[in-house]
Length: 375
Image (cartoon, rainbow, N blue to C red; front, top):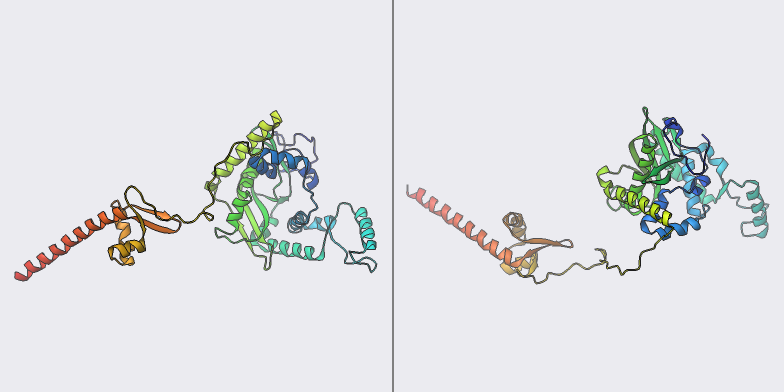
């Protein structure tokens, strides 16, 4: 389907659902004025930041962007790879890349193939390794064997704002149902909290999922699954597939809604604020703040388990075994960093009560034993 307008491409209900995903060159998509996901994150941080990047677009031929684009093409649209990417010659007519002759001749080659982006041999090998690892994952291998659309563009309105999205891979299921896969290269594709889940939060992949899902569903699709396929950038190029728990997307939805509303307001007034002029009071991150030491409270000192042990002459294991029992009866405890602190006065009271009750129980048992012996 060709473009009818540079302003409105979103589905008004008359397009067959599969035709909503527009075939559009990457450069044309990125130059379109609709609000994309990267734009949305910039607006969320600062409208002024968004305006700067809108007026000063990033060069799409930086090494990182070229490697990322090449990896996606090699994995998802391999038939297009040789037309869009090529390896830079190691030498030209016996001259190396640092020579003037090489530079002149390479400029001529670039002019003859203006749409090609060039990779060094090392970067080409990296791209092939990343793509091979991605396609080797059973989920992507299965998705590519099904009817699908790679790098299709979709346009939609969200909170009165014209938006755009470009899912890496849409897999057609029954009727209007689809699965979406987004390919990510990363340093750590592991499932632990410090692995890929942290990168989802750091880079806003959760807001991307919300934003893209809204765009697709606005255009008549029903998104069953939205999967991130992560590939590590270093050998052995390990992979991991992830779905974000939808209960975890509350903040992401709020960011999308607020950013779209902010953009619309800034665009209408042509006012693009930065971080504001007021003084912001901030708290340092936990890793930067020292673990607070026990402080004097109105009810007494807060002590560590070791200090409680030394003060009352009790074993640490005894305290740990009984602290939950005493907490259920009102013992005051708190966490400071990774340590448990116990209120001195509170423990003293509950320990005396515990000892008294325990003593009465022991004495009662002795009396019963003595009575039975007399019988």
